[in-house]
Amino acid sequence: MKLWRTPFDQAEKAIRPAKVLIDKERCKGCGYCVEFCPRGALVMSDELSSKGYTLAAVADESKCLGCGLCDILCPEFAIHVVSNDNES
Amino acid sequence: MTTPLTVGENTVDSLLRLDRMPHIWCQGCGIGPAVGCFTRAIESSGLDPDKIALVSGIGCAGRAAGYVKLDSFHTTHGRALPFATGLKLGNPELNLVIFSGDGDLVAIGGNHLIHSARRNMDMTVICINNFNYGMTGGQAGPTTPLDARSTTTPYGNFEYPFNVPYLVAASGATYVARWTVLHVRQLEWSIAEAMTKPGFSFIEVLAPCPTLYGRMNKEPKGLDTMHSYQERSVVRDGADPKDVAIDSDGPIVVGKFVDIERPTFWDQWKLLLDRAREKKK
Ligand code: SF4
Ligand code: SF4
Image (cartoon, rainbow over all chains, first blue to last red; front, side):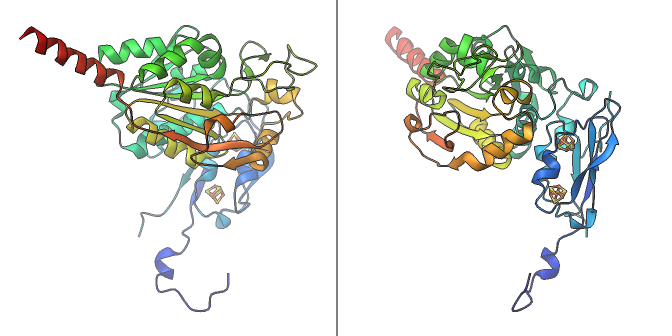
């Protein structure tokens, strides 16, 4: 994004990297998280779970905004996004 | 048994019975996100989980009662509402949430639904509508859209379905909303709003059923249904419930349709008691 001036709260509002945890025992490979992640931070991997489902995986954690959409959309409660919002 | 992802931090995990995970719902089933939104709504509304009781009927959505770490009841088919009514009258302190499917609430429990709305019982109904009877094999029900295929209507459904928000609004519900499971944030806010509002609140949640309804209607994957929601949904808050009927491929109107105030069953009951006592004096 191009800015015509530096916002005074840029440092405060900067995106802090979040951690996306995916539980391999729970994921059933529906693909919702991969499809609806606004930043394309997730992919379907080639790995199979113990039940034979294709697992979702984190492709590039640095792209993640920490919005938590994948976390709330996952039908299996398999994703948890640990945002670093409260850390300083 | 799966171990919690991060103990004590994950809202959803702290309100789920982890010893029962992974759950029985199919890959891509929409009930999971709806349960997730419900648990988040408890957190965001600031209500005490100890004062919330969840009542479910029979069906796929009815299994939710077995997965939440709340006081929960898995009742007989269609009877979640009368059960919850009894629970509420026995302990008015409780915040009642009924989490069940369209087959349970609108079909076999249809009469209970309209009468609970008429009485304005203080409870929140989350009705997962997947347009068919999922658990019994995908038969057509009273919510199956016209022309939609199901295992019992292979040539397309020829019966007109219920327009559920219109039905409950006409019966007297004070809060009526409809969302799809793709509208996760709105759904979470809506559930929180409905739970803190006195009176009969009804939220219809459209959910993909990829295994049965989806497969019969050219949406074999949950993702296909989610895409169709994305394309077809129109958010129209305050729309007249009369105009929000769903057909098999037209627009899906979502939003908060009704938000009014009306004395609840309990208010009316207290008025009556006061009046009767006055007379005796
Ligand atoms: S949304 Fe959940 S179940 Fe679906 S692919 Fe992603 S992690 Fe797996
Ligand atoms: S938190 Fe948001 S940005 Fe990060 S992976 Fe999930 S959906 Fe993508």
